[in-house]
Amino acid sequence: MRKELFDELLESVKQGAAIIKGTMKPSRTAKFPESEVREIRDHYGLSQDKFASLMGISVATLRNWEQGRRKPEGPARVLLMVAAKHPEALLDLADRRRIRKAA
Image (cartoon, rainbow, N blue to C red; front, side, top):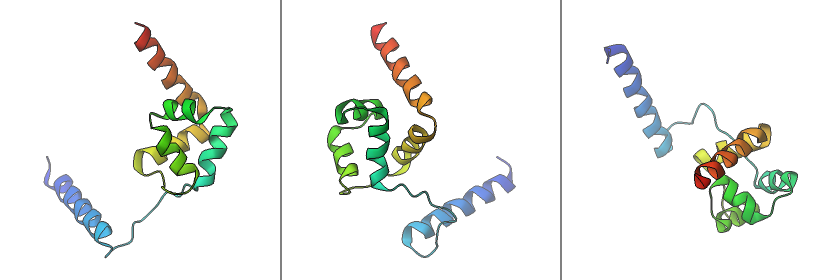
């Protein structure tokens, strides 16, 4: 690895640690209101069971998100944004899972 890339990576790790400690604010954040989780599911007309399965999460997790007891984090938040803006991508993944299971 080139020294410049290593130094950049090291600085990023240090910034990440500072953000976790609360001594530095992140440069960007993704907000995803809990109410939108249910709106996305309702838009598809799916039950909690089917939507949770499509997302690869438990029904309990989905309920907690919809009721505001917990918030989607990290990859789940990104997947929900994809589901909201590009539903065909999520549905394509579900189709691929079905095909693999059938094979």
